Length: 116
Length: 106
Image 1 (cartoon, rainbow over the protein chains, first blue to last red):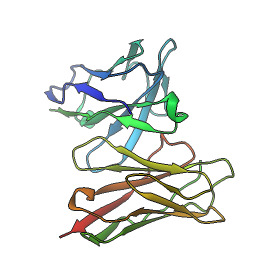
Image 2: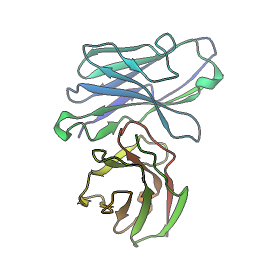
Image 3: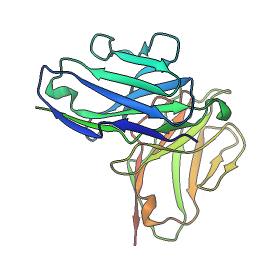
């Protein structure tokens, strides 16, 4: 398994500003993922962030709005840019482990973002 | 990726087995079935996955029908801490559906 931490755990931000969310893993992992969970909804995959390559974004998500960095095998950041109230969500990172054949995901606790 | 259908909610008495069904009639031969759960205000937690055979681990059992068109997640002795939303995912494990909200009742 993997232990994942996220910072901040929650934040309240003003519209038009940006927030960078950090994801730290206790072991080296190749595959990391960022999700959004809007209030009362299921999880939606934003992008896949593999170390050494550009992030791959899902339909409906763009790099200008959600830039992602993956500087090494234990760390990633997601920035929510030019925020609006519609960006109020929980943002989660996850990893998939090679030792499980990439078939088990482990999630961080999430970052609860409120945009006013 | 195959679509899944789960009941939106279920109740289970504490100490009894919780049987959570999932229909995936369009599953293809090489697609795995995954189960995750999300306890309130936490990140999702991996439970189990399987392809054809039934699987069991320390958390649960996964029963997949012979035609693979449906499966059941079994929590053998449900506790109050098992109250959560349970997601059945087929194929690409990164695409979550709406899940089943399980409430374990004292």
